[in-house]
Length: 284
Image (tube, rainbow, N blue to C red; front, side):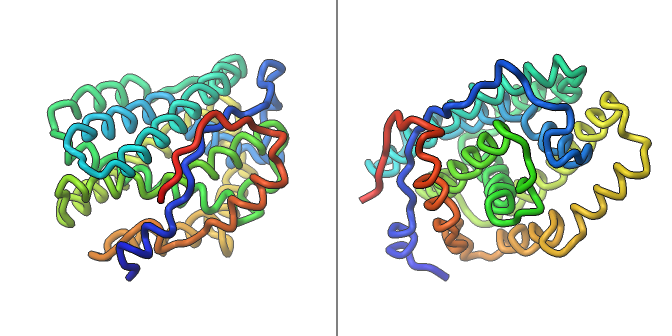
């Protein structure tokens, strides 16, 4: 278990960046290595981001008046800036998906859930956000760490997903820190995590299958062979994600116990022409 001092030392600089890519010309239908399953799985995630990340922003904003840690408040500002940037570029991405005949099938249900969450209270909304942020951090870790995830993606989406994964990694402890700063406890954290895991899997399955259906790939054997290969190969989706999901159940869990800063630093240094820094909130 890491100490609070060690956790503070592992905080990433939370830098808000504008990505320099052009989505106006669109991208190919199967942009992820010609693999329909992986492409539509990532597309399904993109559809969820504009609504989901606005919910995350609203959840941490609601906690700000309860906080006394000035550095944490600055971290939250960086978190909000990064998530707002993600919302903006994924909205553009999703517009092109619409031109390909794809749609956000579960959007009405997601909007209803977000409206319903308004009555849950600040801690519960933070616990839900924290659970989604942990899942997103795992997904980002896999995208950055495992070549079989997005290593064969076409540009500009390879750059987009790498940038998004880096920023999710940088701010992966902000909601956790906020939740605990206002007195959030273990049982509430775990109860909402179990709920979110079930909901995330249902949402992802339905939306991915809908995308595959609209793509004409749902009933093709090759689609499901590639799905099995991606999910169950060594270091694939299931085997990579499972230990990180289980780690969340430890009473002493903290996101920076998985120190993967090295995955972000090389790309940011080598690809600095791909983005423009807008602002930085750096922990002390």
